[in-house]
Image (cartoon, rainbow, N blue to C red):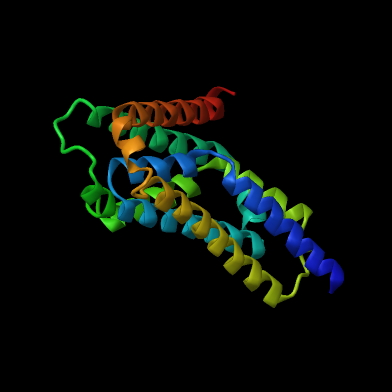
Length: 213
């Protein structure tokens, strides 16, 4: 039992360090919050967390082990995920050249894309990230024993979902907080352009590496 708790603690510690590192999920939550609204950012965080929960469930059920044996699966995921990220980045950059209402305190609190659209963006961004597949594959094959009891698997799945949602929701809330809003409002076009270009770069690199790497 002591070793089991040590393994669970190790999994959650590694997972927490992984999600707080800036990556596509972080960029998606930030860009949605700044470009649309706080509400949209929170729903994007929920979508990312759902993806984490699905990854954890697949890992705990052994599905990731099966999926990783499928030929060309990783390549397909990388190409689709990279293309999706690049498309989202291009959409963000394109917004800069279209007339739109400026981001204000009112639009930060509510408005922007629909909750379903924001949720879907977070979910797809997470699920189509090939690095996430590799991460969960390594995590559950190297750290957690296959014969772990059911309660431990359920606990891990729930904990990963809550940690993921808690972190990304905190990010959305912090950058839309009234005291820091003026900083983002003044730099909104620059931030939006940089985030969009970063998504295009990340997406293009993922897709090209999968095809030609």
